[in-house]
Image (cartoon, rainbow, N blue to C red; front, side, top):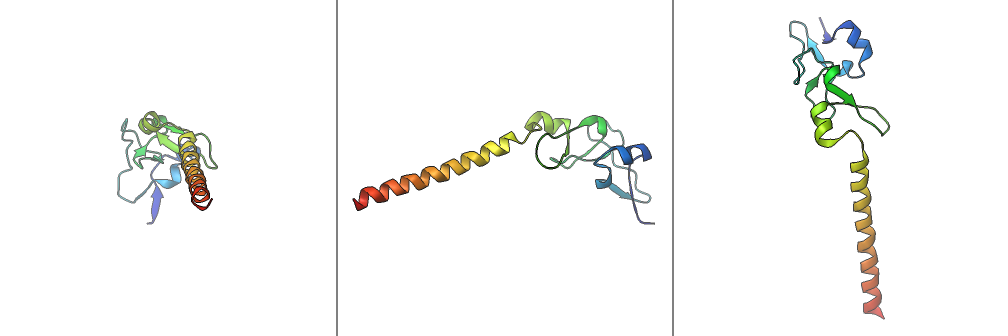
Length: 109
Protein backbone atom coordinates (compact mmCIF):
# COMPACT_ATOMS: atom_id res chain seq x y z
CA UNK A 1 0.00 0.00 0.00
CA UNK A 2 2.43 2.83 -0.81
CA UNK A 3 1.91 6.43 -1.56
CA UNK A 4 -0.19 7.40 -4.53
CA UNK A 5 -0.80 10.67 -6.32
CA UNK A 6 -3.96 12.39 -5.11
CA UNK A 7 -5.34 13.57 -8.45
CA UNK A 8 -7.65 12.15 -11.08
CA UNK A 9 -6.11 10.06 -13.86
CA UNK A 10 -6.69 12.84 -16.43
CA UNK A 11 -5.06 15.51 -14.27
CA UNK A 12 -2.21 13.14 -13.37
CA UNK A 13 -0.91 13.37 -16.93
CA UNK A 14 -1.96 16.93 -17.78
CA UNK A 15 -0.54 18.81 -14.81
CA UNK A 16 3.20 19.38 -14.26
CA UNK A 17 2.45 19.73 -10.52
CA UNK A 18 0.63 16.41 -10.14
CA UNK A 19 3.59 14.32 -8.92
CA UNK A 20 4.34 16.85 -6.17
CA UNK A 21 1.10 16.40 -4.20
CA UNK A 22 0.74 12.97 -2.65
CA UNK A 23 -1.43 11.29 -0.06
CA UNK A 24 -1.40 7.91 1.62
CA UNK A 25 -4.15 5.28 1.33
CA UNK A 26 -7.19 6.27 3.37
CA UNK A 27 -6.41 9.99 3.31
CA UNK A 28 -8.75 12.22 1.41
CA UNK A 29 -7.11 14.14 -1.43
CA UNK A 30 -5.93 17.68 -0.76
CA UNK A 31 -8.37 20.43 -1.71
CA UNK A 32 -7.64 23.70 -3.47
CA UNK A 33 -7.47 26.60 -1.01
CA UNK A 34 -9.34 28.89 -3.43
CA UNK A 35 -12.26 26.84 -4.78
CA UNK A 36 -12.28 23.57 -2.84
CA UNK A 37 -11.77 21.33 -5.89
CA UNK A 38 -9.30 18.46 -5.76
CA UNK A 39 -5.82 19.97 -5.84
CA UNK A 40 -3.37 19.21 -8.64
CA UNK A 41 -0.29 20.26 -6.63
CA UNK A 42 1.22 22.94 -4.43
CA UNK A 43 1.80 26.58 -5.37
CA UNK A 44 5.51 27.13 -6.00
CA UNK A 45 5.39 30.36 -3.98
CA UNK A 46 3.15 29.79 -0.92
CA UNK A 47 3.13 25.95 -1.08
CA UNK A 48 -0.66 25.77 -0.56
CA UNK A 49 -2.59 23.14 -2.59
CA UNK A 50 -4.20 24.52 -5.76
CA UNK A 51 -6.18 23.08 -8.66
CA UNK A 52 -5.36 23.70 -12.31
CA UNK A 53 -8.11 26.31 -12.65
CA UNK A 54 -6.76 28.39 -9.75
CA UNK A 55 -3.12 28.41 -10.85
CA UNK A 56 -1.02 30.00 -13.57
CA UNK A 57 2.43 29.24 -14.96
CA UNK A 58 5.43 31.46 -14.29
CA UNK A 59 7.26 33.15 -17.15
CA UNK A 60 11.01 33.20 -17.61
CA UNK A 61 13.76 31.24 -15.99
CA UNK A 62 14.91 27.73 -16.79
CA UNK A 63 11.93 25.87 -15.29
CA UNK A 64 8.25 26.65 -15.44
CA UNK A 65 6.42 26.66 -12.10
CA UNK A 66 2.73 26.83 -11.29
CA UNK A 67 1.67 29.47 -8.78
CA UNK A 68 -1.75 30.22 -7.34
CA UNK A 69 -3.71 33.21 -8.61
CA UNK A 70 -3.34 35.04 -5.28
CA UNK A 71 0.47 34.83 -5.43
CA UNK A 72 0.28 35.93 -9.07
CA UNK A 73 -1.71 39.02 -8.05
CA UNK A 74 0.61 39.86 -5.16
CA UNK A 75 4.03 39.08 -6.64
CA UNK A 76 3.56 38.70 -10.38
CA UNK A 77 4.66 35.78 -12.50
CA UNK A 78 7.90 37.08 -13.99
CA UNK A 79 11.40 36.98 -12.59
CA UNK A 80 12.19 40.59 -13.57
CA UNK A 81 11.90 41.83 -9.96
CA UNK A 82 14.48 39.32 -8.80
CA UNK A 83 16.87 40.25 -11.61
CA UNK A 84 16.45 43.97 -10.89
CA UNK A 85 17.23 43.38 -7.22
CA UNK A 86 20.37 41.42 -8.10
CA UNK A 87 21.58 44.09 -10.54
CA UNK A 88 20.95 46.85 -7.99
CA UNK A 89 22.91 44.91 -5.37
CA UNK A 90 25.83 44.42 -7.78
CA UNK A 91 25.77 48.11 -8.75
CA UNK A 92 25.99 48.99 -5.05
CA UNK A 93 29.11 46.85 -4.71
CA UNK A 94 30.75 48.54 -7.72
CA UNK A 95 29.93 52.00 -6.35
CA UNK A 96 31.43 51.05 -2.97
CA UNK A 97 34.62 49.76 -4.64
CA UNK A 98 34.89 52.93 -6.73
CA UNK A 99 34.41 55.12 -3.65
CA UNK A 100 37.09 53.19 -1.73
CA UNK A 101 39.48 53.44 -4.68
CA UNK A 102 38.90 57.19 -4.92
CA UNK A 103 39.36 57.62 -1.15
CA UNK A 104 42.62 55.62 -1.13
CA UNK A 105 43.89 57.68 -4.10
CA UNK A 106 43.06 60.95 -2.30
CA UNK A 107 44.76 59.84 0.91
CA UNK A 108 47.87 58.54 -0.86
CA UNK A 109 48.33 61.44 -3.26
